[in-house]
Length: 119
Image 1 (cartoon, one colour):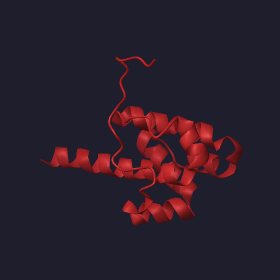
Image 2: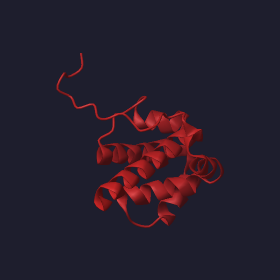
Image 3: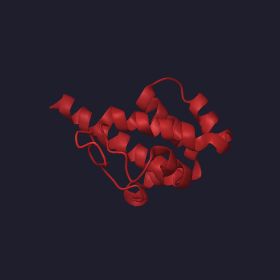
Image 4: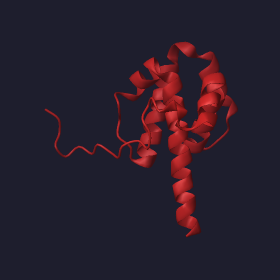
């Protein structure tokens, strides 16, 4: 039985498989996924991009663990639900879709916060 007081979080702005919603992100995530991942990490945590890009590109065997950890950080930053399943599992089986979904979420959240500041 799950805890009735457990905070679930808001839904993501787009589905995991909504890759074609933003064709630019889709192309970058398909062709240069490690670059898009490093941009996502930079937006979530700050810091340089080279380390995250290198790690994602060359450490394929443990990618789902550190990319899943980053997805958890992103979810906490924007108060998002852990869906459709565990963050590591999402990156293990749908890495390309996960990185693209995270980039779309960053783009939407940053645009929303910019519009709040401008108004």
